[in-house]
Length: 109
Figure 1 (cartoon, rainbow, N blue to C red):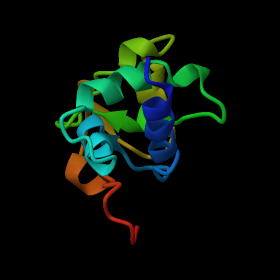
Figure 2 (figure 1 turned 45 degrees about the horizontal axis):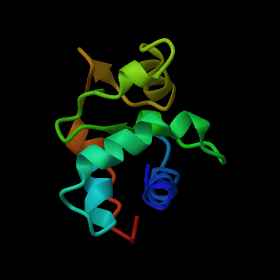
Figure 3 (figure 1 turned 45 degrees about the vertical axis):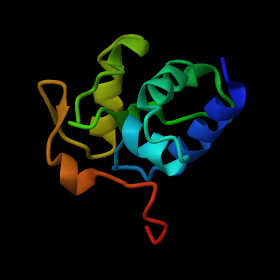
Figure 4 (figure 1 turned 180 degrees about the vertical axis):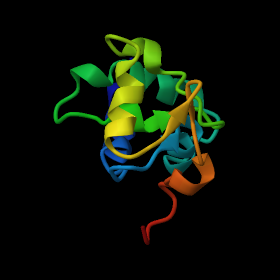
């Protein structure tokens, strides 16, 4: 487990604004490791143990699918947390994904 990489992933994830989502790939790209989206996903599976807290529910796959939901207890919690922030989800997929997508490469947001 590369804890430095994981910590960098968590730092980016903590920046995701409420009501927005980003993808594993966007986080990887922002860290200069564009081909490491799976490693970002792996890091997010341990996000529950990180301090300060990491809003892991805001990280989805590149199609807006809640592929990380099985790391939540219960799995429905990921969708519930997104709904509380105003992110609509249908069939385990973020509705209006492009509209609510937050790109960590866009520093002006």
